[in-house]
Structure formats: structure tokens, C-alpha cells
Image (cartoon, rainbow, N blue to C red; front, top):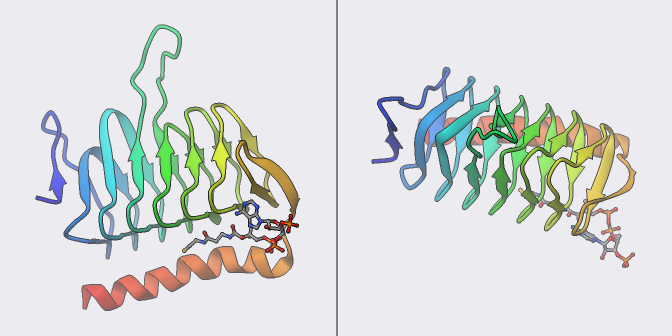
Length: 175
Ligand SMILES: CC(C)(COP(=O)(O)OP(=O)(O)OC[C@H]1O[C@@H](n2cnc3c(N)ncnc32)[C@H](O)[C@@H]1OP(=O)(O)O)[C@@H](O)C(=O)NCCC(=O)NCCS
């Protein structure tokens, strides 16, 4: 079964979401409207929570998890993702916070406590270390992530366009 409860907590969805039947979505996960979840995505909201905004897409093979509360980190590390975010293929999001209109390139890894501000492009294969903050309006690449350059206007526009494309695509799948 794709959508499963953990300790009686079931994932929740807004309107018109699409979850591929091969994805696994467990526990305390809330999604906004028009979210799409593509084949083989695994998201596990068990030892902390996962929250996802509107029109965000999570592409094939990506993994989302969280870190439990402890004496050193009383809130632990939930994973929070904003609106109009594109998570490319085979990304790893662990205990991190992402704002709005972000593209996370294929194979990127974002670790506990990292914060990605609004309007950021994370290059393919990028590793964002624990507690690193990526500043709004920039492209980051590399392992560890380094600020490469300010985003071009076309790239800023593409952040929203990419999310819109996936809203349209998932609607085809729903229909
Ligand atoms: C980073 C990216 C945006 C290209 O940016 P760009 O400024 O146009 O980069 P260019 O192609 O002009 O390359 C500039 C340099 O960066 C390097 N480079 C390109 N992409 C890189 C990446 N992801 N990580 C590290 N270096 C990268 C190039 O090799 C080149 O290096 P050089 O100057 O030593 O030859 C693009 O390669 C990328 O990673 N896009 C993500 C796409 C994606 O995953 N989409 C989601 C799928 S749905």
C-alpha cells in the first residue's frame, strides 16, 4: 500500500494531489494542493514531521526523512518544503527546510538543519551540509555546496515554470 499510517497517523493531502502507486508515503506528512509524487519516492514521517506546500513536485527515486528530538536538538529536524518547489530525480532531503520557488537538481543531498531560502537553484549533485543556509536568488553547486552566481532572470522565471509544468503533467496522470 502506497500511503501508510505510523502510530495511527496517516498522511494528509490537499486538493488534486497525485501520488504514483510505487511511491511510499508514511506517517505524519501534510501536503498542500496540487502536489505530485512520482515513481519510487519514499517519504517517512515517523520520528518527526514532514510538511509540503502547494504545487510542489517530488520526482522519481527521491527520499525524504527526518531526525528525532533529542536533548541536544529539542525539536529534532523536521523536513519542511514550501510552495512551487521542484525536487529533481533521486534527491535526498533529510531534516531540512526549503522555502518557495526552489529547484533541487538531480541527485542533490540536503542535510539536517540546512535552510534553503526562496528562489534558489541547487545544482545537480550538490551536497548541502548540516545547518548551511543557501541565500535567496543564487545558484549553488558542488560538494559541499558553494554559491556560484546570482540567478539569471530566465532561471528565476523557470523556478515557477517548472512547478507549473508538473501541476499540468500530474493532472494528465490523474485523468
Ligand atoms: C548548474 C546548472 C544550472 C548549470 O549552470 P550554468 O551556469 O549554466 O553552468 P554551465 O553549464 O555554463 O557550466 C559552468 C561550469 O559549471 C560546471 N557545472 C555545471 N553543472 C554543474 C553541477 N551541477 N555541479 C557542479 N558543476 C557544474 C560545468 O562543468 C562548468 O565547469 P567549467 O567552467 O570548469 O567547464 C546545471 O548544470 C544543473 O545542475 N542543473 C540542474 C538540472 C536538474 O537537475 N534539473 C532537475 C531535473 S527535473
